[in-house]
Length: 396
Image (cartoon, rainbow, N blue to C red; front, side):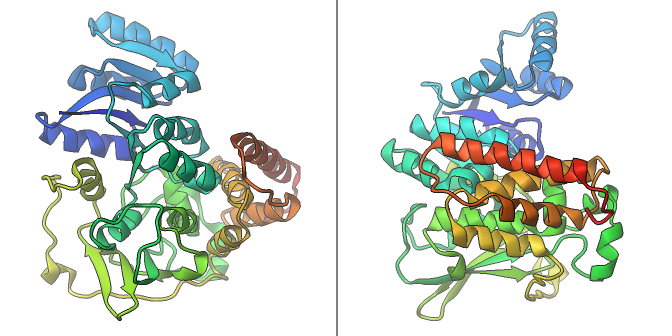
């Protein structure tokens, strides 16, 4: 029986994880669930899965959940804030941590899980984007096991040589082909992007995701963050990764070997596949995903991304090459800009403008401590907010 904590259980990855667990009650035991402020869904999950702990990052939501847990007669301890998240991420009785909190908020508990030597099922990009060196160092020093959940990184992991472990250079690998759907605006004219609305940006053609990640997919920043993450996971440089637009989202990524072989992992676009793979690894278990029907797919298309049309991807390449705190700056500015776009305080094309201005203003430093990373994150957020709040330019 594998004991598991799910960081971000009410989000799309968390819900899919619980669906896999529901299919295998003899294999997995939920010890702790965490969320930000969705009390109703958390209460439903606590009723079904009977965790020992439930954590709400939001203090008022925590108090509301505590009363609801009491009224329901459930035996569940309610914790709150970052301290609660870190505590359940490093519990002695827990074997695996599903790290599915979106954004920088997931950094501290995910890092705590690595330092506690857990099997970390990594769906939180920002742990590596913000502090890749520190995080991989913690994995090595504390004997943690790191398994990627993003469909692309999981596909790369599956296509690597037998016995491969993340964070090490794989022999014979020439490059990684990181696939991207292209998002909802892959066929849109560049001049039409300035008028894109939040409703249009979150309507992803292939995947069901949260609003922030959907916007990142629309700008292709999501692929940029995945590029940075892949550099740390697979010990490669940005120049050893090629982004490939693959609109069907059937091939989830590929590994190109020096002998000319290219190995690809394929499947329906459903996150339960990589979740089930990582949860049971090195075994295979039923995930609930329908078998891939190659005849209905019919064809597979590939094309190069347009870096002028999607400048966020270009900026991510630049941050990856710069190293240090550059990717933390990129991520912080992006989170602030996406929030402003979703609140209709910033135009769609203004997201990249804010990020680029922030990266130019805040120089990269050596990311040799968590304090340095968090300081760069805070400085970048403040600068990005200043651009948004102080600008009268409609493009910004």
